[in-house]
Amino acid sequence: MKNKILCCCLMVIASALNAQMTEKQKIGKVLDSWHLAAANADFDTYFGKMTKDGVFVGTDAMENWQNEEFRTFSKPYFDRGKAWNFTAVQRNIYLDEAKNFAWFDELLDTQMKICRGSGVLIKENGQWKIAHYVLSIAVPNENVDELVQIKEKKDDKLLMELKKNP
Image 1 (cartoon, rainbow, N blue to C red):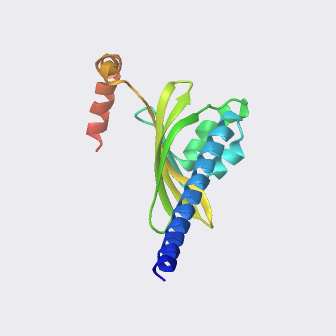
Image 2 (image 1 turned 90 degrees about the vertical axis):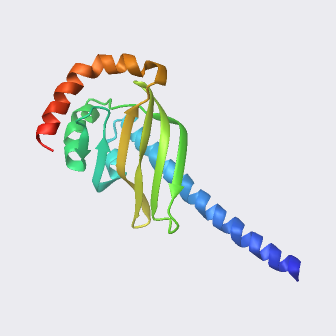
Image 3 (image 1 turned 90 degrees about the horizontal axis):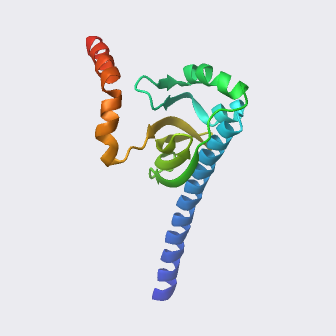
């Protein structure tokens, strides 16, 4: 009898872990197909993977694109048949208990070399959608001082402007 109870408990735990892995796999497929849609300049598929109020935060300090703005900015790149090409080489995905909300981070192979993407997905009508994505250029710690020098003047000017209008 104890073996049957233990076996049932293990089956329930295994089933729960399998369900979580399945959701993580679904999320991974959404992210991979989103990146592939950009590489293939497939505008409709790319933006179809995002929520209507989705946000894309780019590498430039002023790139905080709301969905419609990002569509407008991106359209010429997609129309030329060449947007951007990001391939995940490492990814971590996390889920809330209800499995309706997920967050992730990923290392990407890009034309800018290694970048980091991170973001949030929500489940809408049973489908995972990207609600928020942040792209960062990965900078080795030993190169930070050099990078700060490169961008110092522009950043100082921008900081002055931003501090005027908090």
